Image (cartoon, rainbow, N blue to C red; front, side, top):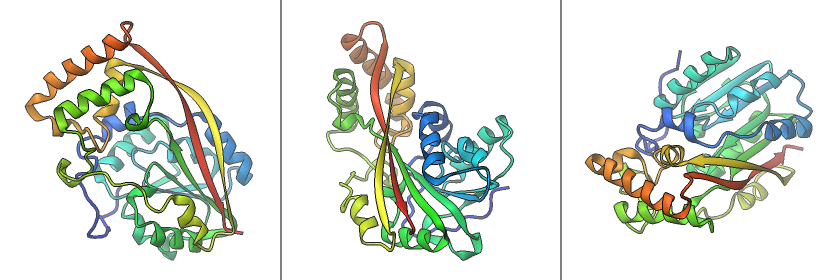
Length: 274
């Protein structure tokens, strides 16, 4: 059972409104090589505990659970956690506790952890506060891993991705939306995560890269766009069918086969407590 919501006033519940099921289906899964690398770095052996913050529908907590005795997975969205529980049940993942809570409110009542992971979510948090609290919860030989994939279409040079963003801009405007029911505007992450970690109590940090190939179709990329904070399906309202038709036309003009691929790098940003 998901516990009652504990979060801070600045949490925006509209950030991924209506996107949980699609997020689990269409967001890029982290390849097994990412979890193999984490296992190597931290000598994971099925013992100890994992804390996964901003867990979403369980894209890290579920596949990494086998390397730990217990997993605590936290997210402020009940919608995401309900989807995570469905995904976990489908694979028999029974050592994960799902908590509806803001990462900013973690404390010693959660116990001690060997590893804390955050995937594609640290930039949404009050980073200085969260990094301090993470440090306090880690075992002496533990660490933090920020995991991200560099598939941001707004900065891509791939023609088909540029075409997709062109259609998004046509329907939603030139500025990249974020939160506030689609009225917010995305701001750069400042300072970078590296600076936040360098200014914390963590002893050292390093970034590891895991390259892999990702394939898309018109429908799966549409599904992906509908899970992003800049193009949630609710933003389009009654115009969704017209947007979808425009997107299909634009993508097929670039690649008539309707099949697309890209080289993605999963970045594992590791910080060690000692």
